[in-house]
Image (cartoon, rainbow, N blue to C red; front, top):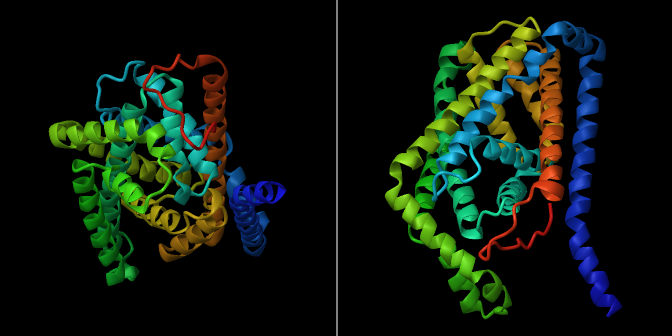
Length: 352
């Protein structure tokens, strides 16, 4: 019995140990970058912000507003019963989880389902909205990257034409999204259920979650077939959210006294999104995103010190909004949860 307990403890603890190890590596990389680039020069650029510091934090509201609208249009049963502002708060709470975990873990999507369950939304509707919103935000991300990369030869003349591998990667990703849409039309969980049954695994999992998985399949397929206006509206709102991220880059740099045009800011944001996606195994992309920013800023003709000062200001914004998100999550967990309906399910990940 003790051996079984020890094995279970080791299986549960090793992902946490790896996450902490990656966090330490990322933090050490950031410290090395700051030391190599000269803390004094970076601090000078940070202090130049002065009274404009609130302008560093506030532009993210636009990103959050349009991302929430994208999620709003992804709900199969409209309107969302608790109103737009409530969904805005839930999005901040889920994003706080996403921002401190490796993005490859999909913890942010699980957090969205979790906070919806806390509000009493049934499991099928919660899962459907999250899967649909993930599809639309990924599709809009491809649109944004395509626009950003098209601007590269115009805004960064020395760069010339990007490597063909970049365009091939976008094409493959686009085909993957098209396949995902077809998959959702024909049943998102159906292949997993069939595979689970064919392998002959214990039926306890299907008995517990099979009903909500099948309900999600039906609801998601109906949404994808019959709600094309809502689907494309969700894509458009998310796309505007990505563009608002480029606007945030422009505003932060302007507050630092670094003036670039909005097109170049969109290029910077698009390239940072690519770096963020490639380093999704790092908690909060710590260190990796800063290193990528240094390379991007050098590429467009700005100094590495400017890159690190910019990233530190963006990290400050991120920390403040993470704090707001966890405050909302705490209130939901301890005081605002709506009584669950009969169809509400408990995620296997437990409390977040």
